[in-house]
Image: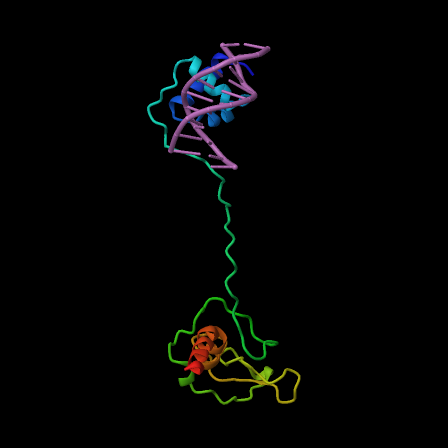
Length: 169
DNA sequence: CCCTGATTCGC
DNA sequence: GCGAATCAGG
């Protein structure tokens, strides 16, 4: 590549804009930064208004998607085999009542066929066993479970953490 | 070690 | 005139 009028003009422009010699060389193509610097000096335009920045190093580009580890999925203790679809929306149980203050519901022993939309679908016992059934209490806040089992399903981490702390005391 | 511009000097 | 090699520096 030679210094055509066009390339010299581009060099002048980019140099005036404050680009570094290597950046200009990359834009022009076919020349090294040494070539650019040499040309700049021969053109007597070495002095520049602004160094643009003391060190405008481009450095490596950040990855477009930093890849965030997927949030922990809903945890369900106990029998998960027949857990009705995990609902991601309610991340925490709306009530802040400590779980130990909630009355553990006595299972109504609802069979699968008897379940309806407003009943807690928390499975009790081993599926396939004779006495396998569902909690059957009134579901809580449109969740598939009653208040107690909603806590078990959606806020197990906090409760378990607190349990551990209380055991240590 | 990354980068910057400056200078030298053989081609 | 050109630019690689080298230098001094941030």
